[in-house]
Structure formats: structure tokens, C-alpha cells
Image (cartoon, rainbow, N blue to C red; front, side, top):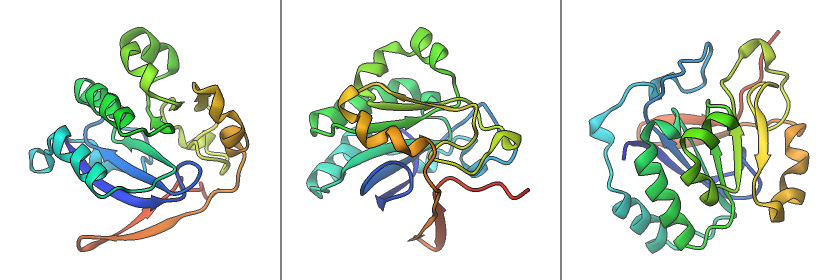
Length: 183
């Protein structure tokens, strides 16, 4: 599996202190994408799912949830499916996945992943529809709360005020969160 970064505690891509995973590869190439550096595959970023899960499990990170984004997580669909199952075994009960595909496409082509996803934010990013609200990038994107136990936790996040969070990662500073559009 190709992962560009693993960050904790991410507070801007879902409720609470989350583990953030950024997967590599994306066919969508959205205009003004916030992570265009993740479009192309990069074999130097390969990590086995077993090692990734071991890292998360051994460090006993007390996260409120996990957010998987990218790139396009479903670009590595077989690996994503295995990762989701393994994360569930670690007892994560709030797994949020961002995807550029719409929900119908996920349901039709990647349905075996859905039982392991608690919240799915779907749809390509459209800069002209960025209304500077919530944890989705543009208003065409929908927050699908698949685990009804999380409804209260997520219901206000569609219109919540956005914020950014900075991490020092290797020799870079990475700004995490949904960017606002400047009109």
C-alpha cells in the first residue's frame, strides 16, 4: 500500500483527535486540489498493511477515530479493503473515508468496503462550489453517516466553521484541514 503520511492528532478532518492517513494515487485530478502531490503513485512510499497496522496498534494510539483521505483511497481498493478490516479489528469504531467517487459508484463497484466505513464523504472537489463550510470541500460533496451511532457526533460538521492545523513532518510543514476558497 502506498501512504504518503500518517499524522496524529488530526483535529480538522472529523471529530476529536484522529489518526490521518493520506493514500497515494488519484484519477480525478480536481482543479485546485489540496493534495496534487498525491496524484501519482510512488513506490518509495510502499508500506505493508501488516506493518502499518502493527505501528498503529503497538503505539496504542488513543484516537477518537481514523480519517483516510488522499489522493483517492479507492485507487488502491484491494489494499484499502484489507486495511479497513484490520482497523476494525483494532476496535476503531469511527472510520471516515474521503473519496472523489459518488456514493452510487462506491455502492456499485466497491460495496465490500462499506461495512467497514462509518462515514463516507463523496464526490469530486469543485472549486466553484467551495462554500467555506464544514468538513467537505465543496457543496456537491455529501457526508454519508453509515453508522447511525455516529449521527449526533457528525450532524453539525456539514456546516461547521473550518480550521487548519499545521504539522512538522520530516523536513516539511503540512497544513491539514479543508481549505477555504477566497473569492
